[in-house]
Length: 221
Image 1: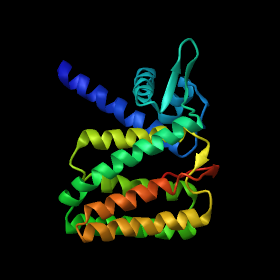
Image 2 (image 1 turned 45 degrees about the vertical axis):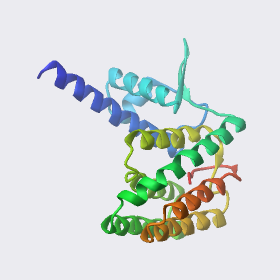
Image 3 (image 1 turned 135 degrees about the vertical axis):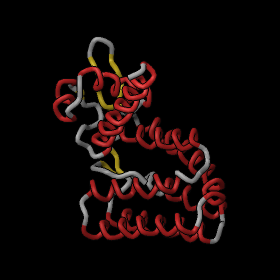
């Protein structure tokens, strides 16, 4: 195996493990402010010490976690001022993605997006919060994958994951969950009409209406 292939494989393992740890944080398996013990992560994710350390370094760069010198790593914990600034920046970035999405998405992709929205509708009624959170994430991942700008997409998800450093949740009530469900279909209708400004407006509302939060479990608009 060449040194280039070794570096590529190492980078792939690190990225996969970083995403798995980030998912565990999204699902509140690790809470804001909680310290992450490397040996526990090695056991939980069946990974080497080197890969765990590399993944933690990557998550620290993303600001999903923070590194405290001589102490270790802990899940990032953000204050309300930072949280509101993240929300405002998300609106700027995610509405900016609307034009690219409307330009690049096709009928087949809209059908796939509708199928994910329908799965979300089903778990709104019968699913657990982790199920709701993961299917909601799948909807937005598919949506933003058509923005046509990989750097913009990366920035969007970096902020959305960083937002996990608060004890607040977007779904503070069942009505908030139902509103999020309705807004998914409003986005789809805007895409069917090829209406980028309308899509941007719905996205902004989707983020902003998640701004009134109560303490709690899991959810990200």
